[in-house]
Length: 103
Image 1 (cartoon, one colour):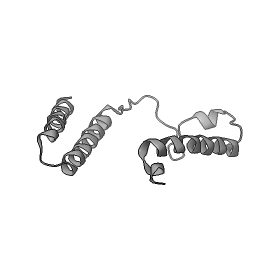
Image 2 (cartoon, helix red, strand yellow):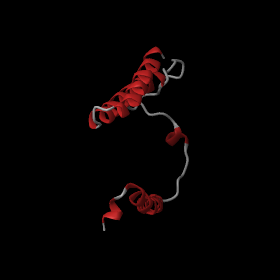
Image 3 (cartoon, helix red, strand yellow):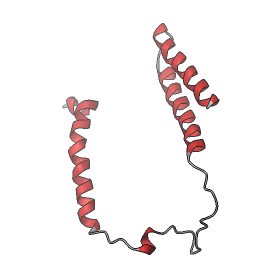
């Protein structure tokens, strides 16, 4: 019975479940009808400005990648033992941090 809890088997079991739930959700939603109001941006009832430049997501993604790599690296290193096997992870973590900090 423990074979069901292994990641590859659980992944293969969850794929059909996810597709079934997605299909069921689409069936409940009904057909989509496009309109000008539905496709326009909404800003609290006010017309949105079209002449101002909107900053992209690049700075956010750099910060998000930094913290994701930092936290996952801390988990890998923290859950490992103090052996030479952890050294490649530490080197990769330091290199990833340097690359992300330098942009």
